[in-house]
Image 1: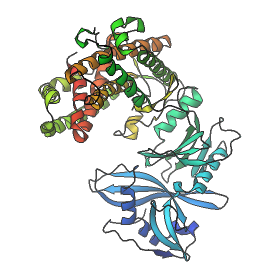
Image 2: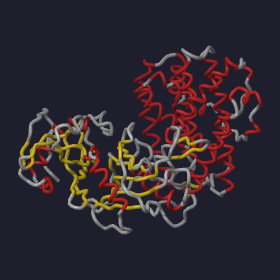
Image 3: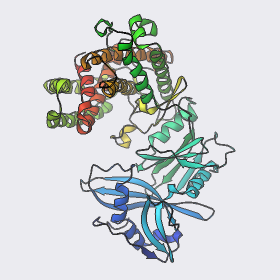
Image 4: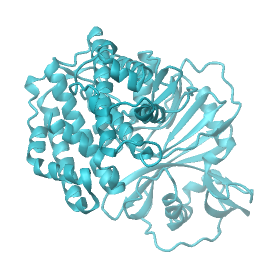
Length: 544
C-alpha cells in the first residue's frame, strides 16, 4: 500500500521520470504524483464513478498488475477511493502512456515525461492497441490459467481473429467495448472482492444450462489479488442484434394503447376490471380490453413471462454447484431480510417526512396515507413467518426490469446480472424467492404505464389525468395477471417450487412492497413529481 495522499488543489504540470515505462509503477514518487488531486479530478468526471454523492478524501493504489503480450505492456490499477464519510470503494482503471499530442485530448489523466519522451497517462481503453491485446489474450487463453491475471475463453470462441473494436457508448457504471461487431467485452469499473455476479450468472446460464435467451458467455478476465481473492474485471459475451430495450418498446406500445382511448372512443368508466394478482390466460381477457389495448401487447407479455420462467427454471435446476443449488426458507434468511427491510423502511420514512413539501395532489394524499399506515407497513415487513413457506429460494437476477431486457423480433433477451446497485456483493448473491424478479418487472410495468401518461398528457391525450390513471391501473391488472398466469403454469410444469397459491401472493406482495419502498427514496430525492408512482404501488398493496 502506498502512503495516503490528501487531495488539495489542482496542479497540472509535467513530471519527469527516468524509469522505463515497464518499471514505472515501482517508482514511489510516480505513484505519489499519479494519486494526487489530478487523478481525483479525473475520476470525478467519469460516468462510471459511483461516489459523486460523497466527498472524496484520498485515493490509494490498492493493487496493480500488468496487462501484456509479446513485450507490449499496459497496467491495470485497482484504486481505493476513500471518503470523508468513512467508507471506501474500489475502481478498475487500465492505463497507457501516449506521446501523440493529438490523442485522447479529452481523456488525459496526467502529463508526464518518461526518459525525455513527453506525453500523457490516459485510460488505456482509448487505445485500439490495448483493446486488441485484451481480446487476443482472451481468444488465446489456455484452459487453466494460474497467473495473477487470468484470461478465460469459452468453447464457443474458436477460430476467431481480431478485426475491429469500438466503444459501445451510453454506459453508466461500466465500460463496454464492441469487437468485430459481434462480441461485447464489459470492463467492470466498480470492483468488489469477489467474482462479479454478472460473470457467475452469465457463465452458469450460458455454459451449464444452455439458456438461449441471454447473451452467450464467451470469456472473462479475473485477477487474483494479494489476499488471494478472485476479482472479475472483464466479461466477454456475444452481441445480440436487437431493436432496443423492452422499456422503450413498452413506452411505444403503451402510447398506442392510451392514444386509442380517444381514437376508439373508449369509455374508461365502463372498462371491466379484474382482481390484482388474478392468474389469467389470454382467453380470460375481456373483448373490451382487447379492443382497447390490442392483442400485441398481451402476446408480448406472454412471451416475456415464458422467458422469465425459463430463466428461473434454469437457475433452479442445479444440484451440484452449491452457489446455485435451490434452498428453502430458514431463520437466517428471515433475520437477514427483516434487518435489511427495516433499515430501508426507516430510511424512506425519514425521506418522506423531509420531502412532503415537494408533493401535491394525489402524491401528497398517498404520502399521508403512507405515514398514517407506517406501522401497518412495518408490520408487513416483520411478520414474515418462514415456517409457513414451502417454496424454494434460488439465485435470481436481482435487478430485473424492462431496461434489462432486449427486444429481438418477437422475442426477448435478458441481460445484466450484476444485481441491485445499492446492495453489497454478498447480499446480491443471497438466494431469493424467484418472485422477487417478477415483482421487479411488475414495478417496471407500473412505471411504464405512468411514464407514458406523464410524457404525453399535455401533448397527446385529451382524457383527464385521473381518468388516464384509472385506465392505467385497469391495464396494469390485466398485464400482470396474464404474466402471472403464464409464468406460474410454466414453472409448475417444470417443477420449480414457488409454493402454494396463497404463499405466492404473499411473497409477490412482499417483494412489490419492498421494491416500491426502495423506489420511493430515489424519486423523492431526484424527481418528486414521479413519487406518485411508487406511492400508488404501495397503496395498491396495503389496501389489497
